[in-house]
Image (cartoon, rainbow, N blue to C red; front, top):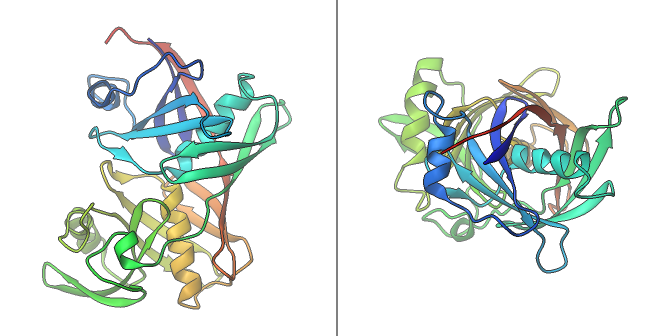
Length: 279
């Protein structure tokens, strides 16, 4: 089977091209492929599939542990790059069906004519607790949260997939310990992604991410969107302006609409290599 290996600021994926409708999602295969010792190695597998309901393409994302994510911000940029660079799509702006719904993408080209960066309208953030989901009605923004004897404050936001964001000043050892504990905490019925963030003196955001189904990763696009939304709601960054968000793998620019009608994400996507596998 032919595959493409892509990365979006260090969040890496095996991409399978099934735009002709000849490919089925196989979580067991994905677990093997994502194994960094015995497989190809990746945070997840991207399936590029035919569009539905009038969209140009469909994206499915399977995590390294075989679970399916509703959405992946870095992954969708890789899908856009692959579709445009290989000629599957012949226009720079198009729509993609995801488990989050229909998202709009805009590709920007580099000097070599290939896609260099991608802007995605990630849709409106979800703040209602039962829709995130969390075991609470209403909003959960900068609220007290306790786990394993640690008291902190956090915000729960969904970008199609659930996120828990904290801006509390926690030491690195505590962060390392709490990431996997928060992911599986009872408060989150479908588990959650976890963002440990801080806003710098220059108004930039720095994040470490523990991803649901993938553990610690170099980047999370939906996590950057959720974190910037939480920061804006808490008055830490402005609405309506691009905010530089730094993750271990690189930078994204995130803009949160003042009326929370949309969140824009812009960042790079790169092809690492292609290959074929016999498993």
